[in-house]
Length: 346
Image (cartoon, rainbow, N blue to C red; front, side):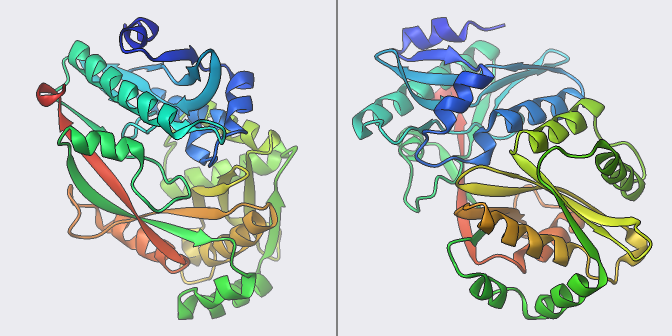
């Protein structure tokens, strides 16, 4: 479809395509190891979207300088019924993340080159615009990627993301929970048997979680491959499952979480709707925070906080779920959504 290496050569950008072993070796040296850049996360997102239809081509690249790896850049081309899109596994285009040893000058040069590559690919695919949202990188200033897009007069809107600072003491984190949640967590911890599957996951437990998810959703929502990849991530110690069981041993709720050395992320949850008035998700979130803190992670990304004023307008369900998540957050950080009309590129 496109020859990414040829395009990158044109703009002085040296890359190598993603291969799990090499990718993970570079990932381990990043200045901030975002879960969205995990090879297992990329594989899952691709499988999830492929299950929904269309052709998804992964061009995720290892960025090189003088032949040495200095960063990672997840990027994907999507095509369905003759319509194309350029994303990072279905989400807005992510910025490159760089290794600890990569010089600032090199980061700026590569960011600018990647942006030129994005514009060229978008033009080649006939796109009218491109959208990017740099991932949280542990810092609180604008990234070089953001500055490069801002210099090209990209439009900027702001979204809220919910985080827990895992550097705080556990008691301090719990004291920042929404007041009503603290009692619910305590009640739920007495009520349910809590089980954490964080390696060599038993397939029978995973099948129970899948069945619960299917029952709650009322249908099969995604491919078997995507579920298998999540199970594989647990076995590779990139993820864990927290489940809740009642006194009869029946699974009544559970949550799946991915993690790296720096960050944890909430993936998917399923809870018995007949127990809606009971503390289920509260317990899973509280225990996940303890688990991620014990693993040495710095931040826990709970998810996006949807607001009624967001555009496009979120669904009432999205607003309700994000309000629940907000009750656990210690911080809200902005994500800058950058949209560029491709005809204005370069």
